Length: 160
Image 1 (cartoon, rainbow, N blue to C red):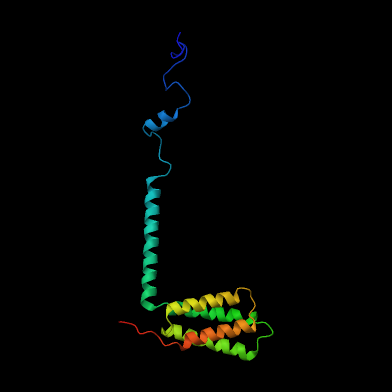
Image 2 (cartoon, rainbow, N blue to C red):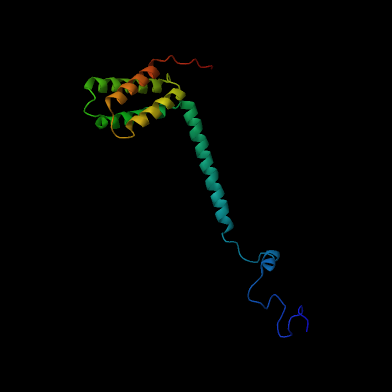
């Protein structure tokens, strides 16, 4: 008997073996049922399309009405949260100056007199100041100065 021929009692038919080899697995037609129903794929497609449509509509609403309408309440909430964060060294005059500048910024944002690019720098400064939950006199003064510069900057002309 040669080394390449199998013994007579061993079957070479692939259907009689319990395990399939990789080439048999990949070369055979897929006879198994799909893992998920076709309805699940259609449902997920409809859900994703609906989500994209809602996001598109929200973007159009924000573009039409302006970002100020949505940033004003956020600035108000941040100003309210800042109250208990002042350290004892911050004088009432510094607190009032900062509060007045935030109130003026809210008005300027509401009316569209502050461009969004400037608002982004102010928001990052606000975030840095309230990050540690304590507002020192130097932080209050620098934030008041930055808010004042933002509030008094002339608005850029729009081309409409």
